[in-house]
Length: 191
Image 1 (tube, rainbow, N blue to C red):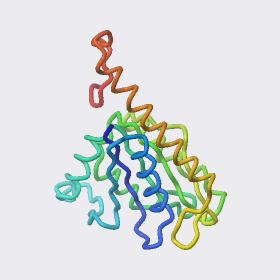
Image 2: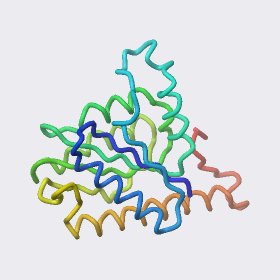
Image 3: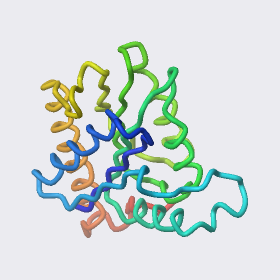
Image 4: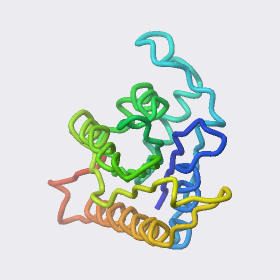
C-alpha cells in the first residue's frame, strides 16, 4: 500500500507533527510504503481562488494525494478548529481528495476540543466523498514532553489507526481488483 501522512502544523514545536511521525513508523511496521509531507517544508500559497492553483507545490501535493491509497492528516487545533494550514491545503488540492480514504489526527492544548476534527471530516466526506476512518486520534499537550510523544495510549491508538488505514485500503483494493466486482468497481474517481 502507498500511504501518505501530511503534517499540517507550521509550528517548530508541533505536537501533531510528533503524531504524524509516529504514524509513519506504525504504517511502515505493517509493511506499507509511506511518505510524510510536512507543511513546514513546503511553501504552499494561500488559496486565492485564482492563480494560486497553478503553483508547482500545489500540483505536487495534489499528485501525491491522488496516488495514495489512504491519507492521514495530522492537524493542530486552535480555538476549537483545525489550523488554517490544513484548511488551505484542502482548498488548494480540492478534487485530488475525491473518494480518498482519510485518517484524522488532532493535537490541542486541552481535552475540550476533541470534536474539532468533525467539521473537516464532514467536509471531506460530503464535498469529495472521502471515506473518513472512524478512529480519530486526539492528543493534548500532556501527551507530549521534551519533543517526544510520551503517552502510551496515544501511541497505541496511532498503531491501531495505521492498522485501519492498511486494512481499509487493502480491502478496497481487493474489491476493485476482483473480477466478480467488475460491474461494481468503486475506484477513486469513478463517480
